[in-house]
Length: 434
Image (cartoon, rainbow, N blue to C red; front, side, top):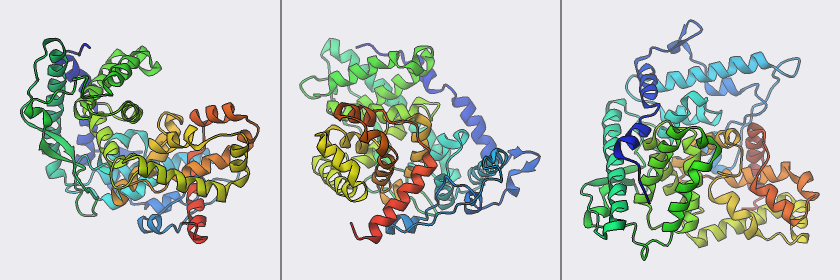
């Protein structure tokens, strides 16, 4: 297996990096204005912005934990369209994020979470996701030092990958001295300061570890296969620079998750592709994927072990039967077993199954609560809401059609699905089903 030259990887990693840094400087220096009005004058609360939007449900942190819900709805306009109103509210929401990210000393994580639930403008999604995943500090005085540390560690991972590839031909053990960023045991996002999801820990490569040893890694062939498949994905076919950026992130993931099974490698690949559409640097793709994957594989979440997955599937099927019995009965009649469709919907938060724009809108809500609850409590209800929306279509399908449609979900009204999911969760708790 070949590898990209180090200078190529670094160039791919820095693609769009200059633009991100310039944008970031504007955020933190308070230079942004919109429509002649300074950002500092944008004092609308997120709750006020959400009123009048039918497709968005607002949920407080305590509400998410208890299952109760507050949803504000209203009219968009007399004509029912309200394009101008939607545009105004979108601009107002963008100003809220500008103001939050432009804080002089420290970003307010509680307000950022609340704003994120209303949807994150694509311009700010990369920066906001890094805060929500605990990849960067809310204390701006410490932020740049952490970024430099991450950049150094990421370059070290790419160097390690190059040595691993070289060892395939020579049989020598690569030795990578230093410390690599690894996840913390129990991260939480506090109102005053964020504890990053990653910390510096001793690298296993310091002791001559070889992730390319076929006898050790049963998933080695899967790493090679998915890396080779990158060149055939539509988004990369005519954009080699973008593909190189993704390859660099994939190489770093290979180094730190080399013992992954083929199924685990596939999960990482689906998550990484989502973050590739968000971030402009390989480093941020890597750290975001690692942080989210760490959450999914710890704290009793769906990827921690087979028992956790089985428990969540069992709970989901119970709720599915209770909330949509007609469709549940149809699945049974068509001999559609849970293993054929359900794990794929739960494991990677619909990555690889849902249209990218719809998926990111859902993830805005998921990541807003990820570190607070160390999980994604709304996701099962989102899946139930999607099934409810697809009920009429699925009732007309036979087994093969059902499985195919659930693997390739149609476009959805993400805001409406979120609102319906919150209502389903409230109903489940009010009926003491859980």
